[in-house]
Image 1 (cartoon, helix red, strand yellow):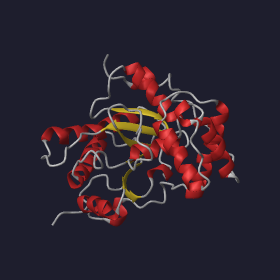
Image 2 (cartoon, rainbow, N blue to C red; image 1 turned 90 degrees about the horizontal axis):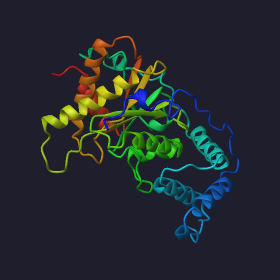
Image 3 (spheres, one colour; image 1 turned 60 degrees about the vertical axis):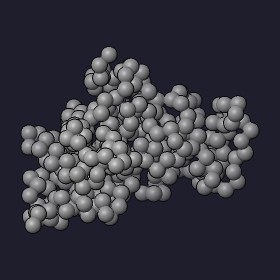
Length: 301
């Protein structure tokens, strides 16, 4: 079976139906976390004797970890309503970042050689707080999220903040596809408990430590950006997209080369699709990462 196209799976995962999360703001998160933990711990015999920590941060970490390692399978509506409420409460406490107030590259680098600098934004922050129409997740070839407990990768962060419904959707897509996702490919799901409506999942190239970057790896990374743009272009609601720095974490792609490929590829794509997307956000992790993008976007001496 070949790689699925959007039309093959969008109805099955109800992509066009707006997900309405529970809006309840919890005043007693501790009690809800206890109830959620009790449900998850009772799913497996080897977990039933685990003791729920007394300190809230520790029990919340345990809840995230249990959800991280849990295989994709349905949870009852009562559990999901409680978890939605918890995730929505945490999002309210962290705060939602709107796209409109963010400065574009044209605002801060008036002589940028990039054609679409008025659409490009460099933003350092938590992508799970950003209210873009779509955010991009750097996934692996299995496309089910990160199964390592509270791992620091963006795949883990996005799945943890969106909720287990996201893993269920990914499992549906991959079960239908019956083969691993190719490097450079992309799929799309709803965002569930995230501020973003959609999540684009793409598999970037792996650059093993100590090896030289190849032309094939550069082409594969460019393909990730093109695949996400082409897929998002099929969804009329998507006007703003936030890209993480694909493959630059544990996948080992050199950051400077990755930033250059990202900017050049998107700028070229927009030349032939000038009217669809309003803003493209490059989400960075650190000030050093931000400076790499800014240097790439500014005129070279």
